[in-house]
Length: 302
Image (cartoon, rainbow, N blue to C red):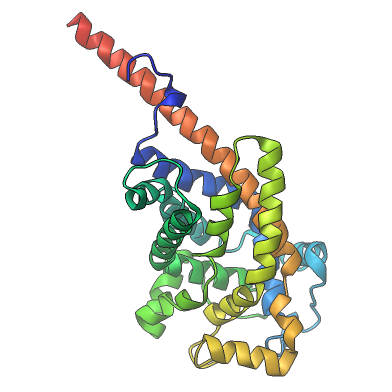
């Protein structure tokens, strides 16, 4: 690699995996309140509320956020953050960090893969990421749905306690609940495959464009996924039963609850994530280059 700049050298797998997971965590820190607002809107109307929560109703993304801050405090917007960061380190590290390597595997090292190869690579890494990270998503959603109000019972007191309790009461199936009704493994990956670019304005436009299309297509599945993952074992027989119950009790509009925060979160998350991803990769490669240069100088001296 003599004479090449750090930016010209393809980053190794470890750099891509670590930078993808770290960048996803940065994006989650920025957009988590939108994700929490989305979950609260998606589960609203699912069942009758009682006690201190009876008079609370969420209206719109900013109304939901302001209501949560007023009734539960600002920390409520970050309920489930620990599980969310765990999810990104497991999910994005695989889905994004392994994408180039899987794509090269399918093309046998050839450049300029066709659309079919990109979709196949995206689906492969996405499906693998979902299968690994699903328990973290279940815990994250349940914490986000949990209200921090006096007189309202809390299901879980801590992240690790939640994992243990779900396993004890629901088994492994509880931790992987909803794994087959998630759109995460397919739609965002496909949009990313087509729309990723190298400058900020294009990042912004393509991310929100892809976010809108993805939300329109995936919102019904996402609402069912959220409700099914958050439900106790006896509430729904399956994800299909959950969807049918929504349709018969709340009508078709229920499948688009939380649409606006979902769209805003997905678009802004992609912008922050991919800008951070590129910068982290460059920084890691520059650090690696400096270390190699110093080590080479030491060997020459010896």
